[in-house]
Length: 144
Image 1 (tube, one colour):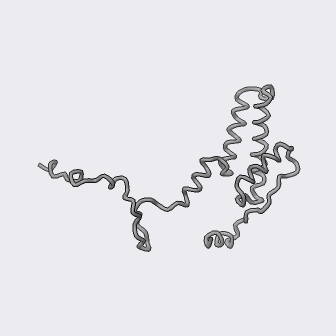
Image 2: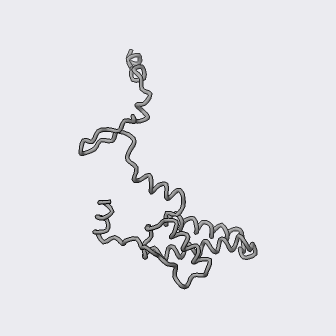
Image 3: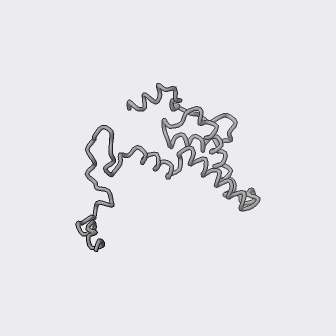
């Protein structure tokens, strides 16, 4: 937690405890907005409200096109709406891939990476050393 507190001291926006959807959204868009905020509690700030609103509108448009196929003029318009929804979800870290990338960035390295503090290396050897034998590194047969 010390890093988190230091992050806040630098003037970064604090996550909102309760971020409510804007009044101009439709009922379906408000529901999509609330679902997105509830999926990542304590993650979004009030500055994210416009991006969340755009995501909620994109979700409702895609859903509307799926229910009533006459709304989508062409397959291209539906495809563009889905692409927009996915891009916004990635930027908001709502997609499974974006959440996994965020979780992996905090994981410690698996291999022996040199450190400035002289920390001991992890017990797992790197893959290029895992199966090395004396015959693999012996190149004396190639010298003759």
